[in-house]
Amino acid sequence: MKDRRSWTVDQQPGSTYISNMKPIQVMFDEDLLAELDADDDVRARGRSAVLREAAAAYLERRRKAVIAADYESAYAGREGLDEELEGWEAEGEWPSE
Image 1 (cartoon, rainbow, N blue to C red):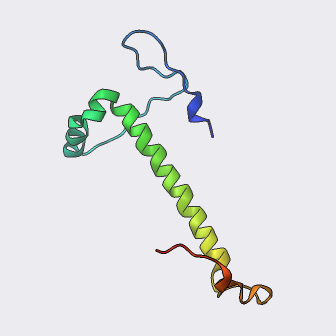
Image 2 (cartoon, rainbow, N blue to C red; image 1 turned 90 degrees about the vertical axis):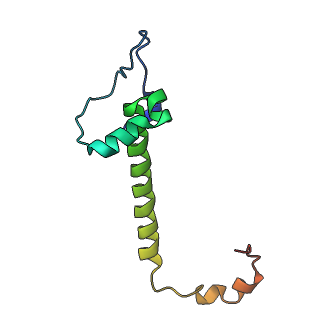
Image 3 (cartoon, helix red, strand yellow; image 1 turned 135 degrees about the vertical axis):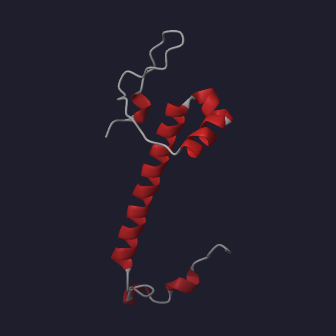
């Protein structure tokens, strides 16, 4: 996976071309597109920047969900601590929820 921090912007006035990006075509519901285009941040930064950010946030959430599922699967069915650590649960100071 490419490091997103390595993106470089073409410094030509008015240009938003990013040298290592690929143009794509995406279909949007007209109402959703109108709402997106009406947003101040989208107007300031542009659709592409906001959609790239949304895609990166989605992928990060998916990565975290996969890791959480892996932990849950690895520790499923385990109650408390192993025998060698029994009794130590009460010794810890746990933050209030």
